[in-house]
Image (cartoon, rainbow, N blue to C red; front, side, top):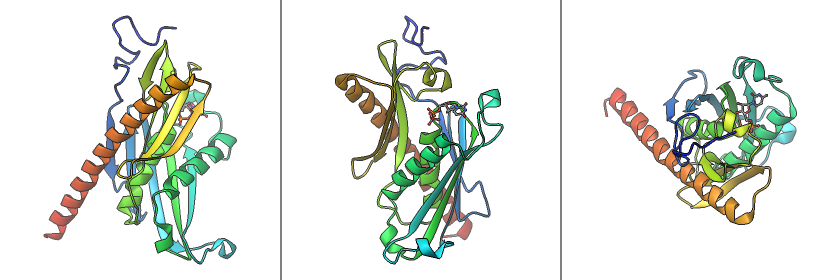
Length: 241
Ligand code: UDP
């Protein structure tokens, strides 16, 4: 199948290095300490953060740092008839762990010993790249909850189809069977905190695809900074500062 036309356009009309439209909203779950919705094209996720709070299971309490927990799930209606199992399957367990480890890289856990922070991410609409969207939503929700972080983790994926590196794959491109590289970065510290790939790629092409995904992460970081700034301005306005 042709995923890039001779004119250089993808099936959804994007250029190879073009990301889907991103949109974010802070404070979607009023009962949570922090929350956010993050959309990348038709992929839409919600993140809710609770904590720092008392550790529920005392045997897991740590005297020198906070315990971070993360739960990823997909809503039953998120993928139409493509959905296999709502939660508790191996894929969700793996993605929960990946998101937790990625977020742990930026949370200053040593400042909150003997406490627990819960990050819940749920996919409302799935169209490829849900783990990236969840990481971006979690970053916003953690910021909204006032959790101290050393940087803002952001994530984006890129793939390689028809000998062309493609940024931010949607479901059709993802299920083409080609490589899908998901990257997470700490933009200010200029560090990579997440690198996942399914399928195989020659090393020089992997470098190109990774570079493209990193550019996507940087674009997400710029957008997230804008959203946080806008949110702070609104809070100041409401408080009459
Ligand atoms: N997907 C689905 N049902 C499932 C699991 C995945 O429809 O039970 C779709 C969904 O659109 C998802 C895509 O397959 O975004 C790719 O899934 P993958 O495991 O590669 O993770 P993702 O790209 O979402 O991080």
